[in-house]
Image 1 (cartoon, helix red, strand yellow):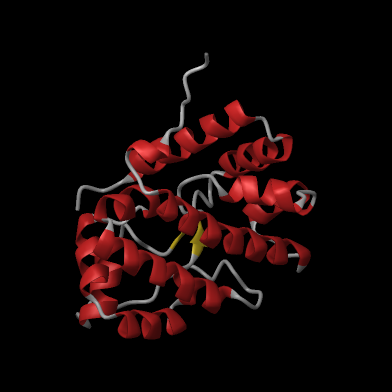
Image 2: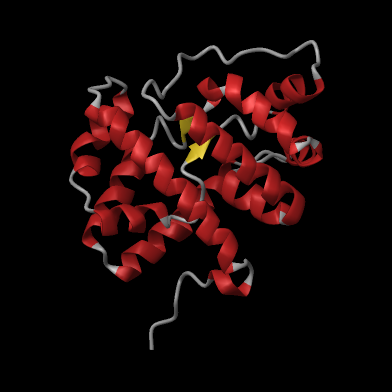
Length: 203
């Protein structure tokens, strides 16, 4: 009998993973819309054909990658302390927005609602699956949901695909999802968790 690589039920509620999957489905839908709009970002050029050729079942398999497939500066304590506390270092990110199609604000609201909920109810999951730093865990968890939603309305430009500059990770994920081989999918989930853990900042 093959030992499973991926057994989330031992350490994490199934409902939490399902909620991340649901957000990831919206992430992939927005990425697909970005592809269809003919966007020229390097990541879009790399994943365009793979993403547009996925059927609904394959899209759901890709969404079940365990970690959140977008980031909103969750490791950057200065970014969120400025936004929430109103500190002097409140600043926009210097990059142009990644998402230019309709839906980015709605996705940002969804992502921040997810971050707020996990920061309050399952802080370990928030750090592991969303990549929140310890400081941002406290900042976002301590903020009111209405305030956080208000911030999301004006900061959707902070929303970017995770591993934006590592297209091979995305190509591997999408190819694996398209093939649907369960063992390979398990390996991709473990890989995503390992990558996010390696990138996590102690603060």
